[in-house]
Amino acid sequence: MISEKIRQAQPSSSATMPILRVLHLAGSRVSDFYYNLSIIYAKEVVQPVGVSSYYAALHPDGFWQLGASLDSLSPKMSLQEMISRLPEIDVVVPHMFCFPGMTSFRALFEDILGIPVVGSPSHCTALATNKAHTRNIVSASGVRVAKAQQLRRGDTLTMQPPFIVKPTSEDNSLGVTLVWDESQIAGALQAGFELDETLLVEDYIPGREMRVGVVERRGKLWVPPMIEYLVTKEHPIRTVDDKLELKSDGTPRKQPEKPAVKPICPANVTPELFEKLVDAAKKAHVALGCRDYSLYDFRVHAETNEPYLLEAGLFWSFGKIGMISRMLLAEGESLEDVALELWRGAAERTRVACGSLFKYVKVSEK
Image 1: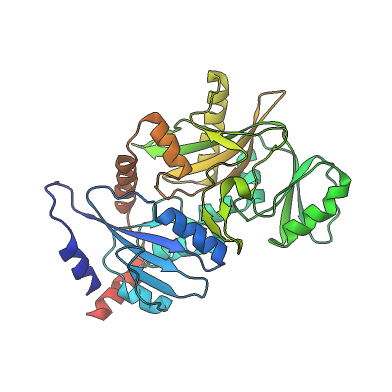
Image 2: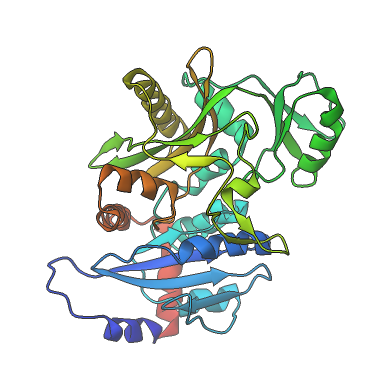
């Protein structure tokens, strides 16, 4: 069996802790864009000592591949065959960014197969992936958000420029437009509706842009050094090109080496602003029901110095190119140690009762 071959291939370890068997879940059922994006990050995941890694990659055509690395994947197979061929796994580390990857496939492994997943549960990621829902939840807990309107086709727009138009459930600034005057409204709405049935039209907050992470460590919420994106008059918001270098077919190639909006970490913030951002991020983490870690984008108003939460991003692929990883490295933390800490913590969570399905599949193979 595959699981036995993997165990035989593992190097001996003198560590007292047993080998942690990690399944890295990558790919996308939605599009080549999200498939490539996922693979870019999954390739960079750290490999802590004491971990046995295995990979499951989902393709847009609905078929899966399995293997001990992304460079040695099996021929494509169905979902049913993939499940039957999984080795024994202690915990799943998700690297999916599309909506089903952030929600349905986390639920498949944790709620149906009964394998713990690192990061927030599917009901939480479903909330956070929707920008409008995120706003409603966190604002009820005292986190400041900008004035906004949800818009469907045929609705009357009541907002006045300048504002940001963005699809409610897309990522990486896809379909996002900064509208300065009424002549730009029609084009911005059209771009947004090409990607989503519902748009969020949100007041533009002039000022600084910050990214803030929250990590659960030893039972407490910890906020590492923050990232600031150095927006300018010429580049007041981040676009897709600031986040990804695209191929000629529009799919991601890698992170850009020289984005127009440059990130710096740690951000240069006053103690007062740091505490405001920490308070808002922790409140959002709790309000949304996050687990293990979470990530938030804020705008800090140029006149009031008050932070406004823009959106939540409940992803971390545990590679050096990840945003939370960069925050940890700026603090002098070992990325491998923190990853192993969180992965082992997730693996120790009680498996849900419906995990018996996974046990049934494994038993039926013998």
